[in-house]
Figure 1 (cartoon, rainbow, N blue to C red):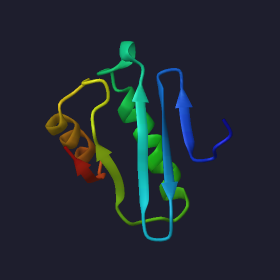
Figure 2: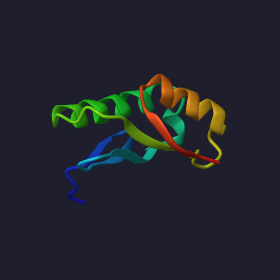
Figure 3: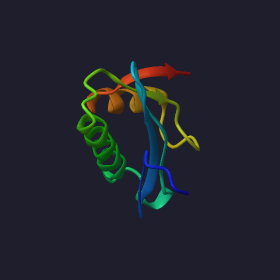
Figure 4: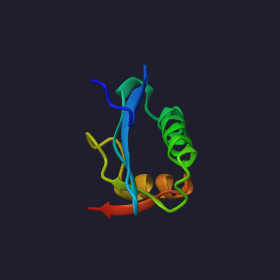
Length: 91
């Protein structure tokens, strides 16, 4: 896949988009054996850095929807907020 708004390493991947009035991180995925070891934080920080390099300075949004029941919504939301992201949706 050739997507300039895609970050990937051996631990997982993440997509993001940047529009005029919004920026969104989505489809964050970390391989099961690498979870809870800081890899999500590293990928998110790479994405934040890429978004900020474009000059975008507003809130960066993310959905707090756990995949594969890997973590509860509250823990995930708290983690994203500590990363400086704005939660767009939680269930």
